[in-house]
Length: 86
Ligand code: SF4
Ligand code: SF4
Image (cartoon, rainbow, N blue to C red):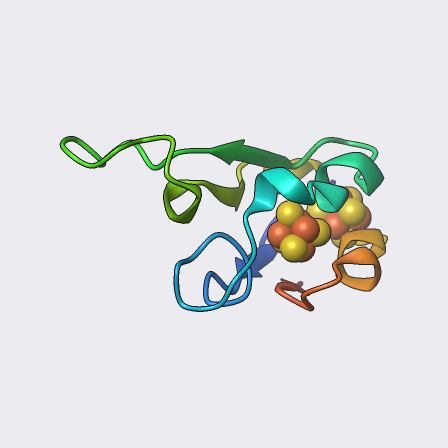
């Protein structure tokens, strides 16, 4: 699709120890996004910490060029953690 899409995830609301939820208990953005823009993963820079600690799992919008700007993820996210800008 069109370029220049920005997708911002607020990690204080999803996937962070500061009050956000564990994305593995949600995953709604993964399910509603038809082109599968999102990836759920433990950050690759975690070395010594437990990679299975919920705070270290996060959602990243990886395949931005596939985004159709349908806004399903923005509307469906129970944490209001996703912004899509284009
Ligand atoms: S706006 Fe639509 S296509 Fe883009 S990431 Fe969200 S659900 Fe996927
Ligand atoms: S829908 Fe929102 S809260 Fe749920 S995993 Fe995706 S970004 Fe996190």
